[in-house]
Amino acid sequence: MKPKNKALLYNFIAFTVLFVIFRLLTVWVFPGINSLIHSLIAAVITTVIGPKFAAVKTDRGEKVFMKSIFSKEVKEIG
Image (cartoon, rainbow, N blue to C red):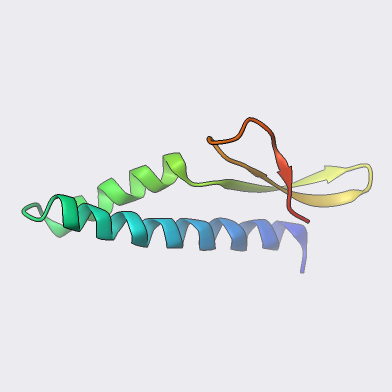
């Protein structure tokens, strides 16, 4: 699998898992608001907090890297 496809897949999986978690938390914390608002809040939180994956060309070939707001360093995934 190409590194660009891996990065896209990792972004999708990370966003999906975090979105479902935050969506359930918003329903639990704010039970009285509209369903669309729950989804919008969860999407914004997930976009800000979720890790970002990118395929970068290096001298050893194309690699997948991850950046998160919780760590200052960029980690090589594979």
